[in-house]
Amino acid sequence: MRRALVLSALLAAGPARAESPARPPAKPVDLLIVVDTASDAKPLRDDLVARLPAFVTELGQAFPGDWSEPGIDLHVAVASAADGALLVAPADCAAAAGDAYIVYASGQYGGATQNFTGTLADAIACAIPRETSAADTPKPLASMRSLLDGDTHGFLRADASLAILVVTSRDDCSGGAGLDAFACAEAAWSCTPALDATPGDRACGLRLGGGLATIEDAITWARGLEVSSARIALGVYRAAPRTIQVAAGPSIDPACERAATPAWRLDAFAKAVPATWTGDACGTDGLAGFAFTIEAATYPIPTTPGMDAGISCDGGYYPGEDPPHGHDTIGCGGCASGGDAAGGLLLAALVLTRFSPSRRYRGSRARAAG
Image (cartoon, rainbow, N blue to C red; front, top):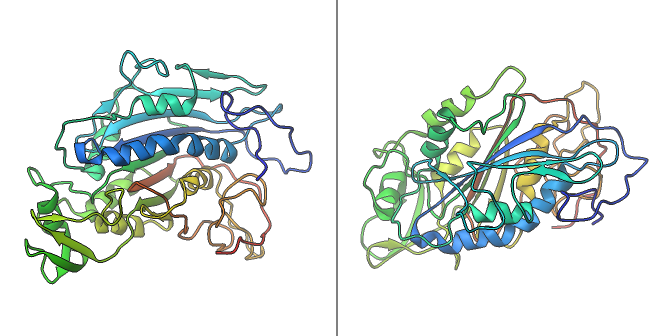
């Protein structure tokens, strides 16, 4: 797969393609990563750190620059899924300056404005805690709301797209004060047989009520972030719905060796947003779908009467340079649920575009098999 100019400090600039159609000027993107800080989520955080270089490369492809225009203008903040508190790089981390958020703005002729040394992936990794002793309960929906509603750090920009990436091994437990992982599952899921301490398999789904914060309230909040020209795209990267197994403790066995369990509350949140991206945390693919979801929300294909229904929004600047499986082609206006799977993480990605300039039209292409 041939790459366009990717974020400097990662790859050398490649030649621009003369035949490429014009695209709108680069837009700022504010990326919030909400990460599970519980000690038993360490395998997930390690996996996230390992996948950051490839994700940053894909993000560079989604927002390419060349001699005529700059690439991405990025803010990245990392916050705890337990309470929304910002996590900053330690003082001895060479890759970041310890600021409240990471700044990276690629230049038109190469180079970049940044507040860290090393690569962008290194800088993000520095703010992600590798070892913790906390028994934190992940509450990503409440945590993202707390941080974004009370932004006092200048992270959010009025002209930027907002991308939120939630990294957690368990389902959302917002509103479940004092509940451990099993008690949160009891409150969040409706299972057959009933979810109790008896070992064995359960077929589960979303439970309404249960004492947790309602999903409807989270959806109302997310829609309240919109402005008249905004478009929301929500992606969920989690263990896909499957039969769960209760073990001694009681506890819920992870769906795979990476400790992820299904997340029916986050799935319900995702289904309320028309443009979605989903992936299975127990799969093998990377985070390309999230990078291209950010691109699709920032540069949506406009709906034009009479246009061919084969126009695709499967991400990437040039035809043929998209994720291996692409996204479903549904014509002008948005992406259907993607099929990219991913390893080791439950990642929910919410992308909100406050201002959405028209993206260039792209003809349909043959999709990769599988």
